[in-house]
Image 1 (cartoon, protein in one colour):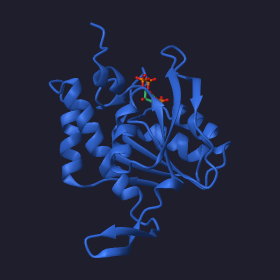
Image 2 (tube, protein in one colour; image 1 turned 45 degrees about the vertical axis):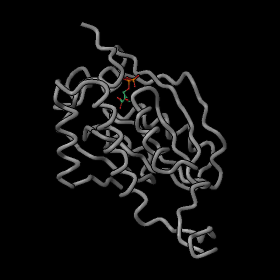
Image 3 (cartoon, protein in one colour; image 1 turned 90 degrees about the horizontal axis):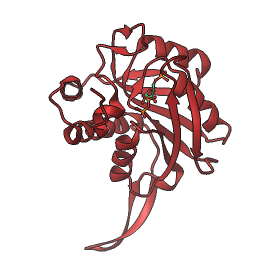
Length: 208
Ligand code: PRP
């Protein structure tokens, strides 16, 4: 199921990302803020466990998320700030990494690095800012599903409707939380209006 954030604060941050004047440092910071908003929504209905902690009034039990059962997996490289953000919010979750590169000619994604640990009994938050054709997400979901997590939730900043449809057709069982569903893909499979190449913008690798 697809859930799009509607909060005006989210939309303000998306506009900041689209603005060409937004330099890499602020770009990554903004991605991280939106990621936190996505996580709040995605884990809104999660159950909690009781944790016994030392407080100023002695030992007491309080509700907390079971962080040990949560894993965040990113698709390098544009997803890296999202992974950092998830781990700043929930420092005890586990991290996994997939590296994929979209072939600019065939528009297909190629997997060249898989460092996702055992996912059994874990909820996996799969983070990648851009969902264009959906090819990368489809492939990443295949890889993660083979590791048998209890649930996968995809967190994306900007999606194209075409890509969302593609992923829904191939993986109807996963929830997708997206900050902004844009208009369409262009002939080069870039999201319109989008924000350009998120990886390049985040890491100052735009070639003139
Ligand atoms: C971007 C983005 C996704 C992918 C989306 O990564 O971060 O991983 O493209 O496109 P798709 O839905 O058509 O598969 P890119 O390949 O540009 O690599 P990068 O993160 O290194 O910039």
